[in-house]
Every structure is written in C-alpha cells, then in structure tokens.
Length: 289
Length: 218
Ligand SMILES: Nc1ncnc2c1ncn2[C@@H]1O[C@H](COP(=O)(O)OP(=O)(O)O)[C@@H](O)[C@H]1O
Ligand SMILES: [Mg+2]
Image: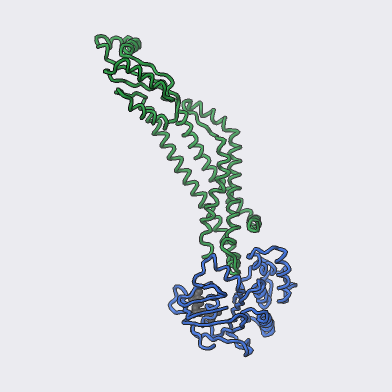
C-alpha cells in the first residue's frame, strides 16, 4: 500500500507526462482495437459462410440401386446433412434436358447412362474448418467417383480470409509490442528522473522489490488509464457504427462488415494494464546497474 | 564484526589493484581509524565492507555476511546493519532533512508513528531539530554532515562507516562530529573512520594505515 501511495504521489508530481504517455498508449490500444475488429470480421465471415450448402456425390455406375439407397439413408443420418436426394442417371438426363432447348439437343442420341448416379446433399451451415473435415469424411464414401462442392469459391474465400487473418494478427502483434515498448520507455524516463532517490534507497538497504514496486504500480495504473480511454472511445464509436455499416452495405452488399463489436470494450480495458505491465517489467530490468 | 582475509581488489578496467592482500579484523564495539594519503584505498576499503564492491581475491565477512556471495536481493540485509556516511553525503535535494533521515526507516517498512519520534529524536541528538523541515541544499557543510550522520545512525546499525567525516569542516564542527561518533561508540557500535586528517586521532583508538592499497600499520 505504501508503494501504491508513492506511485500515486509520483504520478501527481508528473501529471503532464503521465497523461501524455497514457494518451499515446490509448492511441496504440485503439489501433489494436481496429486490428481486433478486423479479426472479428474475418472470423464472422468464415463462420457464417453460406456459400456452400449443396454437395453432390457422383457414384460409380456399377453400384446397385439397393446399395445407392442404403448409402443415401446412411448419409441422411449424419448431423451435417439436412437432406439427401438420390438422382439416378435417368432423372439426371431428364432434369438436364429440361434446362433448355440446347441441352435437349446436346443429349439426343447419347446413351441414357451418360450421367452417373448421384447423391444430392443439402447441408447445414457450418464453419469453414468444420466444412473442411466434412468434405474429408465424405471423400471416403464407398463407390464415390467425384465430389462437387463448388471447390473454386470455397478455396478463394478460404485464401482471402486466411490472408486477412494473418495481416490482422501481425498488425495486432506489432501494436502490442509497440505498447510494451512505450510502457518500458515511459518507465525508463521515470527511473532516470528519480535516479538519485533510487540510489539513496539502495544505499540505505532497500530491497530491489521495494524500489521497483512503485514503478510497477505506475505502469499498471497508466495501462489501466489508457485502457479506460480506449474503451470509452470505442464505446462512443458504437453509437455511430450502425450508420457506417449501412453506408458500407450499399457498396458491398454481399459482405456484411461490422464496425463495432461489444467484446472490444472489455478487451481494450484489460489489454491496457496487461500490456503495460510486461513493458514496465522490461523497463525495470536493469534498475540497480 | 568486520573481517577481511587476504583481500585484494581491483576496479574493473583499471590495471592497478586498489587494495592488496589486506587482512583486518574489528571486534564488535571497536572504534578504529583508517588513515593514509589520498588514493591509498581508504574509500575502496569502505566500499568493500559496505558491499558496494566485491573483492577480486580473499574474503570479506561483515556481521556474518560473506560479501562475495551477496546478490542484489541479499545485499540490502547487509546494508541494514551498516550506517554509512558518504564523503559526498548523498542527501536527496528537494526533500526535507526529516525525509532524508526517515528514508532509512521507510525502506524497512516501519509505520509513520514509529518513524516520526525516532527521526525527531535523532535530529535532536545531532542538534538539527530546528532544521527538520529545511532542504539539505540550504544547509551549511557541517549541518549536511550531521544530517548524513543522523541518517547513518537512525536505524541503530551494528556498524558505522564514515568516509572523511570532517573533510570540509572547521575545527569546531569537526569536534561536534567526533563527539557524535564517540557517543555511538559508547552504545556499542563498531566504527571505522577513513580520514587523512591526523588531528582527529586522540591516541587510544585502533589505527590502520594504508599506503598504495597495502596495510602498513595496525
Ligand atoms: N571508481 C573507480 N574506478 C577506478 N579506479 C578507482 C575508482 N575509485 C578509486 N579508484 C582508484 O583506486 C585507488 C584508491 O582510491 P580510493 O579508495 O578512493 O582512495 P582514498 O579514499 O584513500 O583516497 C586510487 O588509485 C583511485 O584512483
Ligand atoms: Mg577517499
């Protein structure tokens, strides 16, 4: 408690420096907030990804009708599968020729078994990773010759979201490092300002912990202050976010982008002290040299 | 209380040894003077006893602490047994005389109600009660020396080390400081005083003489 009291005293002696550094940290935290927002959006995009809800399994011609039905019944029981439709070659031809006149012309004279029997699955929405393992599981179906699930779109979206995630993560890491460096630097300045006091304390028998404790409090309090400022700014931002989202939606109707997430406020509030404290530790490591 | 066995010491980066093969013992309650010309190694010897430096060779054992084995974590517990009066006082400017003395007890985590009477009593002993709220930079050399003395003694240390305690003082002020030292000695404090001023010696204390890092007389 004495250390906390000393920390508060020191903060009040150096109010301007404290507020300035706290605001710099808050600005860095806000950048971190935007990186987190980007991550939330990527996650949201891939989690609620509705592009693929239909998978077609083309089966071996030699598979007997009874076995096809058995397979359809089996797949129907999978939790991912909403509906299974068995499409035999005749139905496939019929459906194809009904598409257009050109299709009908194209089909004339070809054998009735030009299309293999197929199972048309309607599947529930699922996250990208779950979808990936679902596809793998389907791949080992007996009698399967080809699996059609819109591979191209699937892989494109996967690539883009993966790239965005890496960019946002790297940005977040750099900003976190930056916050720690700023905190360390702030503490180094404070150590320099109070070097005589530290020297005398050390000479009269203060332990390293006694000497460092007020500085740790100071770093923690500054982190908390910056976290509060950043969280408050984001909370204020949440009031205008819906307007921005509406504007964005007119440009990019296919991709819903969220400009605010309620998790941001507590996240930033905690990130302040949790990043400032390790930085402070780092700044304090050579105090007694 | 203070035991040095065949101690040699060299400052890092310097070629000459500041102390050479030095053996010295002080019993509890002894009062001793360390003399010798400037540069002989008196301050260096006090720094070793204080744990500010470690011997290059030999053993330094102070109040049961082997200085060579001290870490940053254990060194403070040696220093709490030692009151040191530095040649340059090392008082904190901008802090009152009271605060400068009280820092010793604050570092020990003592309560405000314990610290206040203790510090005021100490200031009374060195004759600075009226200066308790003054800043050290407004005091004369002799007064600053007495503040340093009060800070060294306020924790009731087993050992008192003084580096040139009368260095810049006139005869009357030097006499006052010596009276304080004698008083501490009577209470059983082990005391070692580094000085190049031979007029301080009254003849009946132990006397060590250093020359070029060697102990030439005991
Ligand atoms: N910090 C230091 N670094 C290197 N050499 C030093 C340092 N302090 C003192 N010395 C050297 O050590 C020797 C002893 O110095 P010192 O102990 O201060 O002597 P005294 O106190 O008797 O005047 C001198 O030669 C001095 O130059
Ligand atoms: Mg000296």
